[in-house]
Image (cartoon, rainbow, N blue to C red; front, side, top):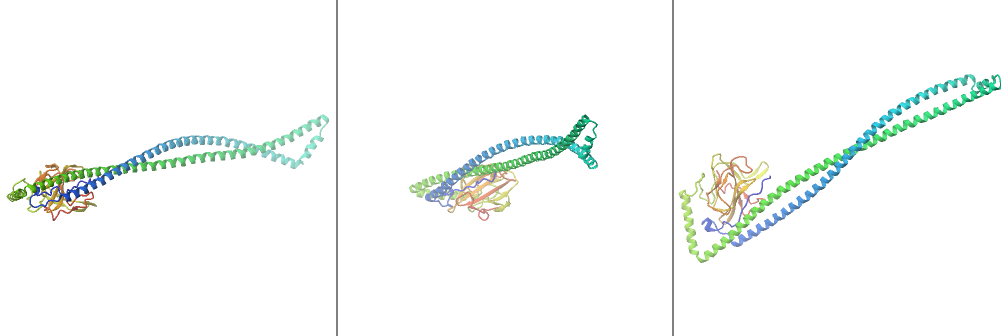
Length: 430
């Protein structure tokens, strides 16, 4: 799965001086509501995108169904073509056998014609020597009596009739020979043409099937990509919902604070001053949760102790929206980089165990993201102090080694992470 959008910011949730002490300024209820409207607008846009994704998925499924129907039709056509090719191949073999038989007949016919040719040549030579019909008259005139004459006349007539029959048979054999040769050539040509056409059709059908297979594979790939994008949108929508809920909480808290301020402004101011003094004393005395890295005196502190391994910017052709801090030691604490409210704490496929915290520093809203943790100590809605342990460094989610992936966002979060900034120079780093 592609890296899911997991970063989150919240405006105004931690804008209460009663939560953060004297270093923060409260965001106005109007500003919080404006940001809440913006979140609702973004949620509406994401919902529309999810609906579009569903429609595209339905369309792709419908297209896949049509392609599958076409593949079924092509399979039947290919099967029918194969059967016809088999039939024509058998017919071709039969035709070849018939050709062999006709060739034998042609051979016999040629032999008869050759023999007749020799006979006719012999007759022609006799005619040339004897004078043709004159020799027949000599035969008739040489008869001894009338009866002998009749016999001789009948014999001559028979011979002449035989010559005519020979000539007729000779012509018939020649004609049969020509017809058989034409018949063989035409039949062979016809079968070969039909077989070639069927082979061509089979090739075309197989080509069409290959194209449909590629199209179906492409449609399935598109559907998988849209499903993946839909999952990203759904996770983004869930994060926005958490942000909206936190904003609502912030509005309620701000309203409550204003009401209490009107009733007991002096008491609230005294309590805030006492809380600020107590926080400063705790920081100076080294009290609070024990951490590996020392807590800085500024608004932000170092989120983990270790080795700085990767910065903010493009890495391996992709934008790296944070910095990485690695440490091979066991049980390395991850701490809140500043006072704030936990917006979300959960397991993400890409970020593993991740905690989102919203901060308000001198009137500016920030969001920090701490990812790939082995364990999370805090839950959504919890108020945390700068330097408080929120988890243990780990190697969960889309991670290739034990480290902390830390992001800093200025202002309201959006899906493109356009508010992500380089934390170096703002948040202390190893």
